[in-house]
Length: 227
Image 1 (cartoon, rainbow, N blue to C red):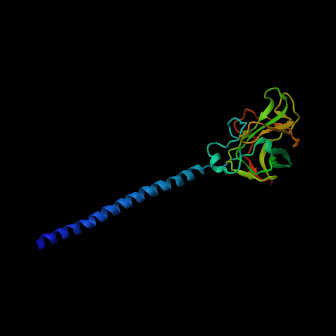
Image 2 (cartoon, one colour):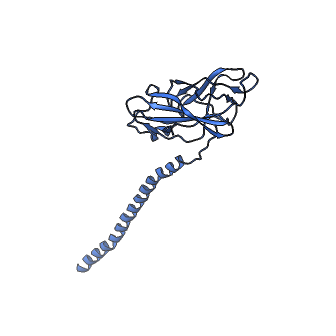
Image 3 (cartoon, rainbow, N blue to C red):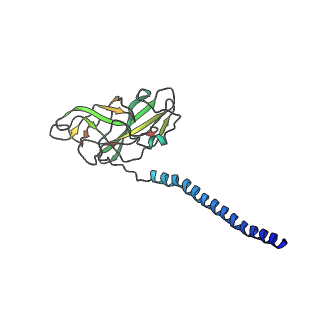
């Protein structure tokens, strides 16, 4: 009887490491699944932030709303509302910048007048209005650059800007050329459907390139400040 009891204890003791090994193996497998799941967003984030910046106008048609896209809501602060057209004052900056040759730039400045913080993200829509051009009409809708937008938070009284890069016309506007004199700028803030109108105080005539694939006149996304 004593031998039988000893054999039973020995068998149980021999089985114990197998059970422990199985438990450890299951724990290791579970850890691998957890690690794999946690790593997925890292790859997605790297993919989302990839891409090069550019400064030339794109060949897409201009849009009347901001280019926030599917990632806009992820980047915006959910506790801060979007800036609506009624929250903003718009005007052209007082300084013009010479870039290269006949290419110039001027800021279109937005100021938060709402009395509360708000955010802007995207490009908005910018149309230059002027006399009726025989070939292109009285409105020049500006293309967007290939730059990546960033969310801009505006406190009360703070400003942001869109850069209008334009190709200056170097002659006298006439029916037989592409030189055209804007009189006003009609802007739709990002993700809005109503507009603000400001005078074209830059003064320069511009060269119309409505059908160009990469025109010399285009807009950048909203950026913080006015510097």
